[in-house]
Image (cartoon, rainbow, N blue to C red; front, side):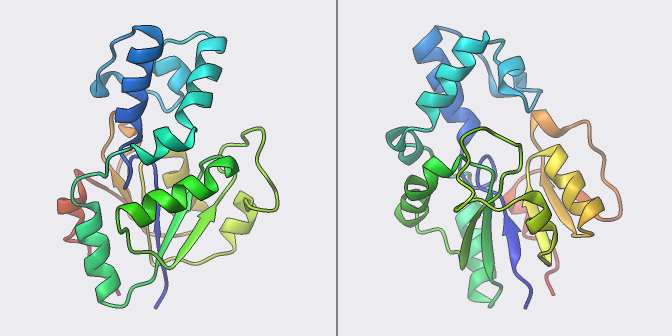
Length: 197
């Protein structure tokens, strides 16, 4: 059976919710989930470069990562898939410095998975090449399904990798429309209807 690619942030971990709380705490700015309409958080939160760098530093601390909530329905559906023998690959664009904390978070929430892969999806500085793989390396892998929230990654998976993509509906990905290889789902409960091979 081919593995299922499952992104981590805002697919199984409620990352933007955590970022909203950090921005309020650190900068006194109140931003709602629906106002996060750009994947570029500097734009969505209307931050200066120094504020953005501070947000990124704080948000990637182990204690902040471990405090993130789970997206409703994610574990139930992943467990169901795993119980049916479908291998789960957690594929994240997180900084390599979060490797241990990310694995601890997955264990803490009993998220079923068979492999954990960090991909340098966004050409971020400070990525450890001994841990992260490149997009080119990712493109050599085959998945039966990819679950994503990033419009750019959804397009890459659907177009460049010819992978069926389940795009979880988020305010920052609404510019991308469904197409033969890419379908929008409102949430994990909606995604339960996807027919796996």
